[in-house]
Amino acid sequence: MFLVVGCGGYVLEGRAVSGDYSSVELVGPDDPRLDLPGLGGVAIELIRDPESLGKRVVGRSNSQGNGSVRLSVGDFGVGFLEEDWDIRVLNRGAECAVARLSLPFDPTSRRLLVIVRKGDGRERNSLGIEAERLLQQEERQVPRDSVIFR
Image 1 (tube, rainbow, N blue to C red):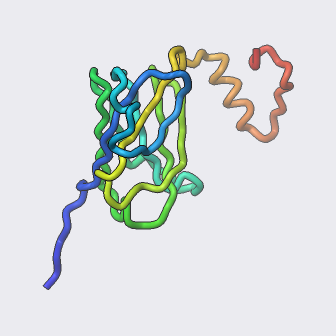
Image 2 (cartoon, rainbow, N blue to C red):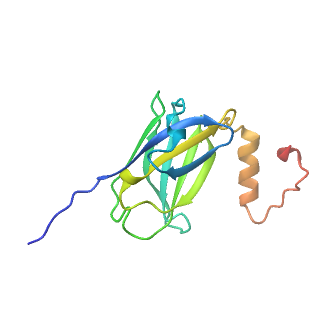
Image 3 (tube, rainbow, N blue to C red):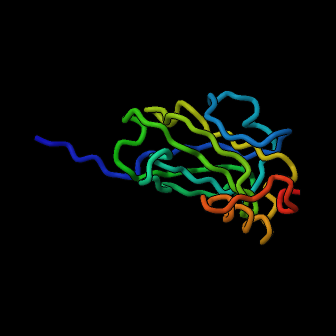
């Protein structure tokens, strides 16, 4: 006899809050920071195989108005395969925190704590996007004292 287990059963829950620095981490369910006033509209992405060419976003969520976060993942092996994951936090469209971590076997044993510093997550302007594009091209060298870094 075989037991068939449905996908999509892995759910990380947590909270997005304001703080003195931006970060994302897994904490115990009794962490007092989970009781801080919530921050709505923060986007969270879970990235599988972050070091490989095949890396991909396997889960997305936005914090609710009260700051609560519920990140559901349907990929095979989440939580019981030994691997690293990236959790990326975006506020108003701009990245403000990334953490590389292992997901717990039992997702109810840990909570996702997202802290966003006031002012982090400003929209990137076209000059910043162009600077990133130039830096990614190996044949181009952008002087570090260039105006695009000021």
